Image (cartoon, rainbow, N blue to C red):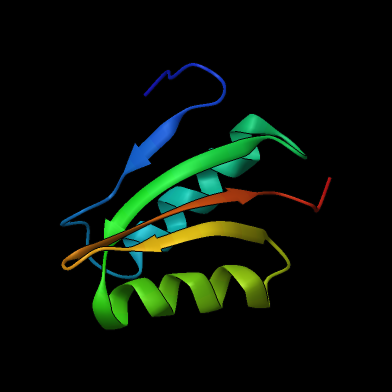
Length: 79
């Protein structure tokens, strides 16, 4: 799962809570302040991911909702 910095993570079809876990693992790998562009399932799943990330102190921005998926940028402010 080696991916370049400034990467994207497509989690469409990945079930909860694995989608959230994969985002957290990738952010830990990237380090503080690095952006990760995420595409995930929309609806309740997408809202749950965004809420959980924000509750844990991650910075979420540029949220774009499509009919069946969402796109957003997230970074780790934990250091």
